[in-house]
Image 1: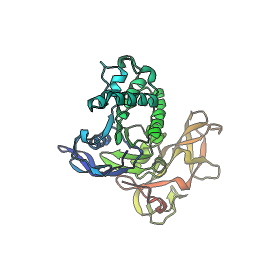
Image 2 (image 1 turned 120 degrees about the horizontal axis):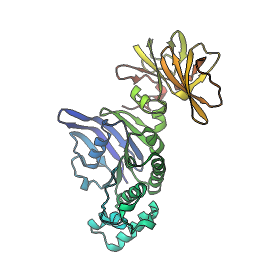
Image 3 (image 1 turned 90 degrees about the vertical axis):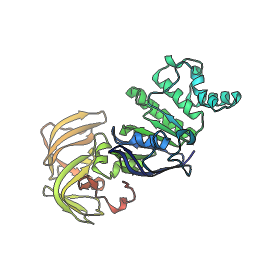
Image 4 (image 1 turned 180 degrees about the vertical axis):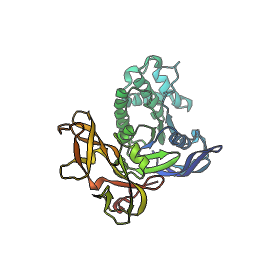
Length: 364
């Protein structure tokens, strides 16, 4: 397996820039997620890493070797696509063994490696079946087997679970992560599903309009989003945004929200004008002692928790509270915001003015 390093990677298609100066490192053995909405540049980035697209500029290192201008066949990687890309006229065994046969591997070695992969993927019982009659999950296992059998330096996966239904997709995500842990692979995985990224990834790159908005651990990205886009894209429901006019100075530990003093993490830089206070739904608590009031608009029961929609002076927000708490539509409630979890965003792109203690967490 291998470390992969991307430096100032850029891709232009005529006048359109799909990827803008992206930089990040995938450590050896990591399960690394490229996350973002459709058109953000994540698949283009993966295709450049795999050699299916040549970069306009920048560098790509795999296992210490610069491969930016090398074709895919010289990069020792395996690519798994969303739509399986299996050979319909071959059975499962032949599909998995095909890469080895094309490389001239001996028949005995092919047999050994195919059976080893079949055991890992738990598909020994279907090795001699045609692929046409298999379920979507089994076909995806066969596609994975064809990639694994080569023992490449890295696996690149472009939304490999996207064609599966929601319930089976979650099950396959668990299996894919377990498979990664068993074989110790370096894996780069593209997805638009933030829940999938948080569930599976060791590290996440969040992209938007060809730009890396943030790079870090899942919990870091969730707790300390580097921009308003990341805060809105990660989380279900997403972070609430309370917009206000004001001034925040470097070192401040509070802001004034509609005349109410709200404690926040110590700010590392200042800003003024139109600012936004961000708070996760689970970090809002109802309190009779709070003077910041909101009206209950709706509730959504989710078993152990409920989502309460609230109308405030700064717009509509959502709180996640225990389902045991009694809430009445149209009642006025006091809100307490957990001061250790708040983020202030400023500027045209909503960059975060975060605590100096978290300066090393944010990227982009």
